[in-house]
Length: 639
Image (cartoon, rainbow, N blue to C red; front, side, top):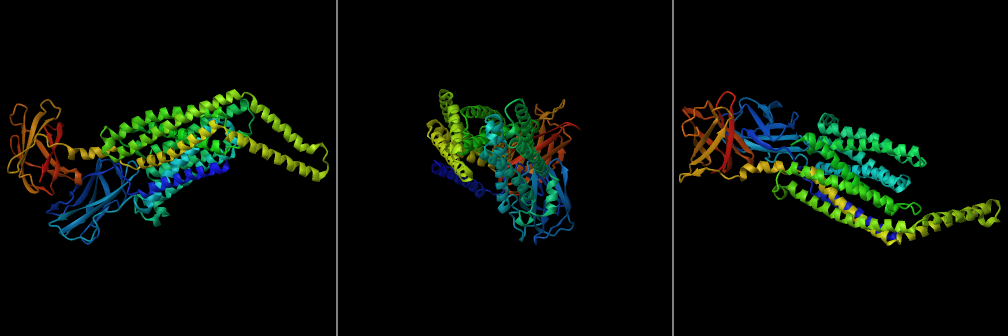
């Protein structure tokens, strides 16, 4: 039977390596939660006078260091002065040197989003007129390259280590307490602890280079490591290491003092104490992920973080317990086979875990997607569909395992007290062998008797193993559990990729403006564009309609007129009107325009520059009093 088992285990190992390799092969720059939503000067624009600063606006707050925002002249020399500073909200700026010459300047940025992913990019603007430049327009590739692949591998191993550590320990305590003395299970859980600890240290060392230079040589830079320790992600990794020290103590007691306790009140008390301590440590480890990744940003972080913790614990109980059951079925000694009652307990634990996964997964899907269309229109949604499909397959295979479990339980009940008689026969045979036939004397005869006893014990163990392996119900259960484990490995790879992918809600919101219709805008034969937008500032006299005329609505200089009217059509005398143009498809804008007040309800601006053709979002802010204002917008094709 060993020859039959070994190829299957080799296939399982090869599947694990293949999935890991596929994960690394596709590892590029990490898709991040934060995105550049505006800049001043805008991308590709030509300004008449050199700006005094460059500002960038992101979709969420980001972390910056001294080199996060750089501006390079046409020869590639930096022209920024000082460090980037937060101007307001999610806008960050850096001052520029005075007296900049004419030509094309390159802005490069490299920041870290609130959910720990690096964001990098570059764009150009020109002073006076465009020129040749020696600077590459692609910018740095944060999160990519060799370091990005190594970091993705570390994340995969850390998730796998946590699942095996927490799930294996839960299987022993909740399902098969005799398994605490099984060497194969001990090696599995300790291996999970070692993998998680090594992966955490690995991620801590790589973090500085992963979010910074991307150079492998910077992995052991102590200055970068010091900077990482001051970030939210660094604090989470250090917290994980401290909790792993407590987990080491838990594992030592579980496989040490616990196995030596006799059945009784003392062991039950120790079981309860280990269960409480294990849940606390496992929840703390799960929180180290929740506090630094997608759950900590976006909608409802106060609810999303505990939901994420429950989700991770349910995954560990199901998949980690499944791995422990697989090891028990294949590697447990013949004298201590896993009982049908233990398999039945795990079946109940897995069922409860699946229910928790469905509930928490539904909430996470709504939070990260926000709409049904995001399932197919975004990469996050597509990966989530793959994950849901794999979970469905896993549940189907688990249902088959439950049927085998029922048959195994029925068989155990029909067998009655037969195992006890077999054990008694073994003890009698052992004693008979120890006596050596009752006549042997002397040290030589004693050694031969001991050797004979060991041989007979080995024969008995081999016979028991053959009987156990010949059981069709146990054989069917082992095959279905092995299939579950193979699907679980692929599921873990998809889950790891999801944690590095921009949430579908964010991706769809970034594209919403460019896909919206132009509304009530009309275009005359000459190319003039008119947009009508109702507004309500919320005050006592705050409702009205703002109309924008843009002529000729093409690339280059345009004449713009803004008319503000009350609902009855009369001119509305408002103190301030602002207009901004944004081409989100190419991350250009917002380009602010402050029109001049001509007469009551009429504002105008000449030479409104539109740098490139596209579906532009035109946003108008109308202020009706010192405290009441409203912003409305519509999209229109210009150029």
